[in-house]
Image (tube, rainbow, N blue to C red):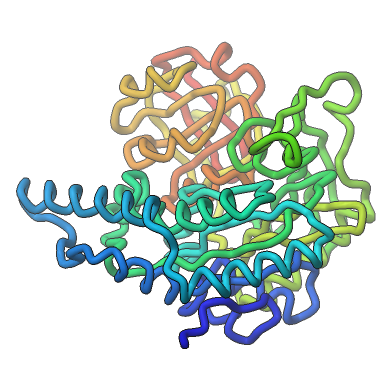
Length: 431
């Protein structure tokens, strides 16, 4: 019988070819003593077996003409529907449910999280950051199994197909592992970069779950540490809401509006920031390259949730002509330097206005912007931080981005020639 399920402590859980880099990288962190949540992996072989059980023709690949493109689209729809609607085959279902029930028992009935771990994500040059979904707060078998099937099906979604096309890849050439863990009852969450262009470390933090940062919905707290782990500076963000999970009586995540001092209160004290910086340095040493992490902190301490390769470029020295023009500061979230016509967009319905080579100026740096990153010269947003999913994609594509720029859509004139420094976190425009 095939072995489809591996505890996070098993050697197979650190095998990128069996469970995908996301799960394997996290299991490797745990193997060297870094704090990670309990959990188990569903291997990519399980996806392959389930896919074979659909009995669909998998020969259609990337199309070179209209007929082939249409055939590939129809194939993707049929596969996605099949993975979402067909029951999981018994040889996978039985060990999967057994492992899930054992995990929830160890976690005292806590809700669980189901996360994709495609064999092609979290690799250098193609992180797929924010392209796949995570499903939080699952506390019954039906929802849990639906989430597993949804992770499988996501490999054939239109968004992933577009992303893969830009990277000369196809979902037919890869497979999907799945990572299952207890939901961390997060007091605070965030991300971290083990290396910046200034050879420093960077941490971000917000209240509750980290999705508010990942989706670019808040301006997170920002902590800068030296390469040796000394705290150099800290700056409070604008955290006007937090995201928590409402299980046992509700579904999905719940957003709580914050007000008063808590909006500006720092999520981490100096000792906690230094401790987290130590974990970041150890993760970089383990992977042998700069890394980007995601983390949460509950009442027992920190839990590392993800570690992936980090792409960075050296800082750009701007022409002196720009230094005399108005500027706004924000959180550096991309790489390099870009100039172009400012296109101020306050609603997703206006994204069609953004032309090739424009500097997009908007309110929220959310996942919807990923589809236009290929044609812009830079991005400026009022919300978001250096460790959001969109920032990861910008670094991967070499696009300068500055997030958390207060009132950017009101202060930067539409149509003005604008420069974005994605390393220094500065935006300037011709007055």
